[in-house]
Length: 106
Ligand SMILES: Cc1cc2nc3c(=O)[nH]c(=O)nc-3n(C[C@H](O)[C@H](O)[C@H](O)COP(=O)(O)O)c2cc1C
Image (cartoon, rainbow, N blue to C red; front, side, top):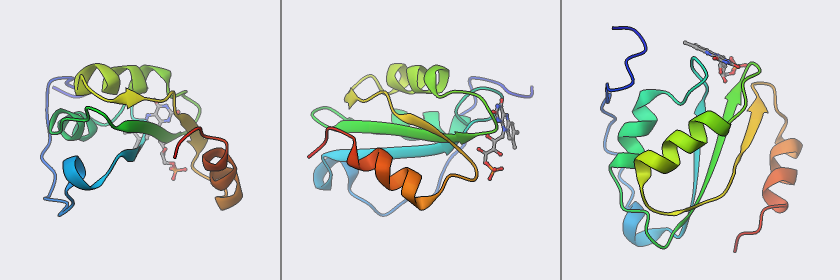
C-alpha cells in the first residue's frame, strides 16, 4: 500500500551514541505527502529522548512542518521538542545559521 503510515523502514547503524553523548538533537527530513518519511518514525521510536532537547526541521516544496513534527513528538513519546522550522530546498546557509542562532538552546 503506498504511503502506509505503519511501515517502518530500517536504517543503517549510525554509529552514534545518541542516548549518552548528546543533550540537544536536530532531526532533519524532507516532507513527503505532507508528512515525515516513515523512516523518521523508525528513528524516533528507537530512542529514549528523556531529558533531551529535540529540534525538528524539514525541507519541502510548500508544506509546513506542523503535521510532521506533531507526529514525531507523539511517536517519540519522550523529549522536550521545540517547534522547529521548515525550509525550502534552496535555503541558504545564512538562513539556517540565523535560525539556529535565534533558538533558545545551550
Ligand atoms: C515522494 C515525495 C513527496 C513529496 N511531497 C511533498 C508534499 O506533500 N509537500 C511539499 O511541500 N513537498 C513535497 N515534496 C517535495 C520535497 O519535500 C522536497 O523535494 C524536499 O524537501 C527536498 O527539496 P529539494 O527537492 O528542493 O531538494 C515531496 C517530494 C517527494 C519526493
